[in-house]
Image 1 (cartoon, rainbow, N blue to C red):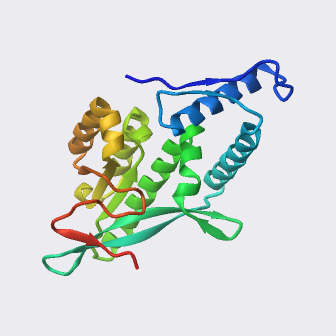
Image 2: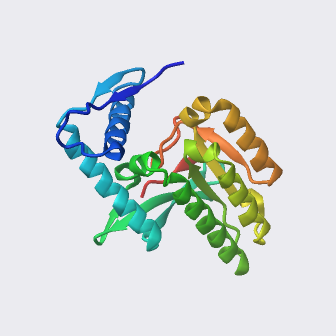
Amino acid sequence: MTASAGVSLTHEVAIVSAEELLAAADLAMYRAKESGRDRLHVRSPDDNTDMRNRLTWSERVRDALDHDRFVLQAQPIMDLASGDIARYELLLRMVDEGRLIRPGAFLYVAEEFGMIQSIDKWVLSEAVRLIEGQAEVGEKLTLEVNLSGSSITDEAVLEHIESELAGSTIDPSSLIFEVTETAAITNIEKARQFATGSRSSAAPSRSTTSGPDSAPSTTSSTCRSTT
């Protein structure tokens, strides 16, 4: 077991309330984690800029959630044996000032400020809607959805999955949950519970070493097109 600690000094002029002091210490803790975990970080004046940047990004993410400014792109995954497209992985983008922002720029902020579960729920709902829409015109669509480590430990997310599947007509096996090995190992018991719960809903889950926009490190039957 390791511990990361953040320290903020009370005599700093920029700190004017208990809430700001706690927020500054919280930010210092995240800086300690980013430095490799099991570390101590004492807040410095340079952290003020970082805090403002993160707060700005948190506001942008919250605004995107409130005004439906997330979009999904589908990356095809090919079956190497047949050459056919077996399924698609959904990739998240945020629309900000007319640009598509990749998740590396905002997901860590969403995680820190407790918005990642809301994003994952939105993606899950959109995935079900897309699969259902294709089924209505006689087409089978299988989608992979990346889930954060926070979501696999959140009972509300599993309940959301169960509710979405129960309220739709889709084949649950057409929705695949992808969880990074890092998240699964860090939360091994919760990951096991999540996998058991998702299987009871008939939606498969699997772990991978890939990030949101990258291919898994090894594969024997499928490959991903990055075009």
